[in-house]
Length: 251
Image (cartoon, rainbow, N blue to C red; front, side, top):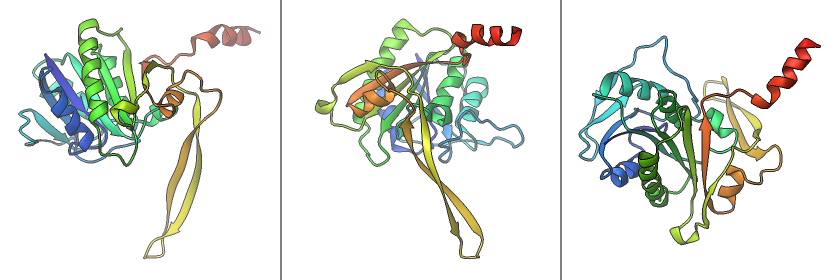
């Protein structure tokens, strides 16, 4: 059994280390991940710059490669150049900060797993709903249990699983819910500042808020102490609107 681990927080992130340590007895682990943090890059990959890869020693890992590129760059290189064969599973994470609602669109963590799903490889993205917690144990343990089930039961082609785990102690987790992606948006502010050389620069800050009723959604589940497991499709067509749009164009 061969498992590819990747992320968008960088190859030295604690969430990736937690996955490595926890999943090591499921199979042969290969780690191919960005050198530095790539949060928010979504499905970007490099077209006009060279990709450099360096094999590194990471806590005794025999197959660890740092990529000067995005999460999707890392997966593309892993699947086409680095691994001897396609893996049985791709796991991306564990991300620091939840990837629910509209965050799924922006997330490099989710995009890395989506790249695997596009090639028919069972793929999972995992996030911890905290930017401050250093305890990835609950998320890693759940990922191991879930990965074992996926390896036995597979996934439909073009479908990946997005997992979000509350930053709680094991006894505080209320359970697991299969959820849908919440409809949400960012309430944003752009802070304008001036650097020491009197040049303007900007920080984008904001928060993810529900656009409509979130009952049954990933955001609601995590907020209420549940692990959210959300199937995400590569295909993004709004199937329900096709007939409406067709009638509109005919008219």
